[in-house]
Length: 282
Image (cartoon, rainbow, N blue to C red; front, side):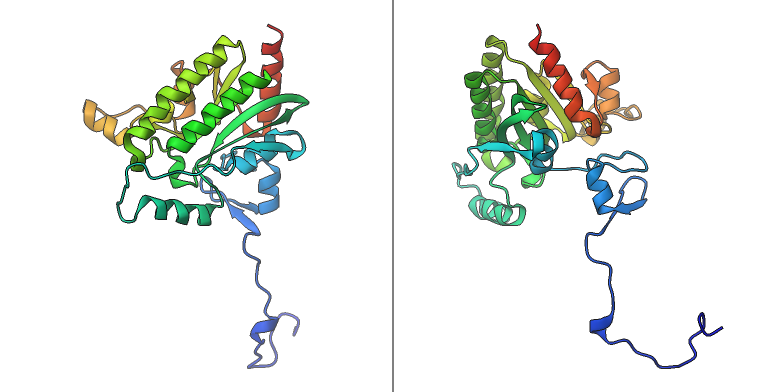
């Protein structure tokens, strides 16, 4: 039948008439390799509909997910890093910042905003891995500190969403100072008897883990998140032993008592709102 067999030879379709799949229409899960529609992936809170793999997302996605109708007010949105050490590696630090700002659309690796979550006011600081690996520099520490100050001033709960490779080497000691600064601010939040919830996402490592990320009244994490201080290779070389299966995953950390619970991103807003409502009664 000619329906299934080309009867004429040499038929050529002009390039402008060829139909191609638009870029970004499909998403392939890096874990199970299954393909799904991008819209379906987004509607599922950027988690795989087949294996529930939690894809890395940034502050914009978290703010839209957590704040009612995605409405929020951002604090200190134009704050940008200086160059206190005149640092140069393969390029000067100011040039690296400028390139990363243009590429990511972000001013630094953290954004802070306030708004309503299920009708209740909340202040949220969220890190972005897309900005120099979510590294913690002076701007990150200052934005978190100011976010905590805003929470104290407005008497609202504070939520920290961590996603970081650790301290920013281009700021050296200035970066490490942010560990003490943010921890001291959290002590003031505790004195004000305001709730602090720390959400650890994939990955949360280095100085971030060693400071504000693990100081929450409740420390919670997304499934499968990498959480630790030094990397597995460094630890293995240091102790000279093989590491347990699943080492430094959220599930392993929970089993050993360093997390309160693991929450699926699709349930994140409801679980956090319920937790804050519970804390408000005490």
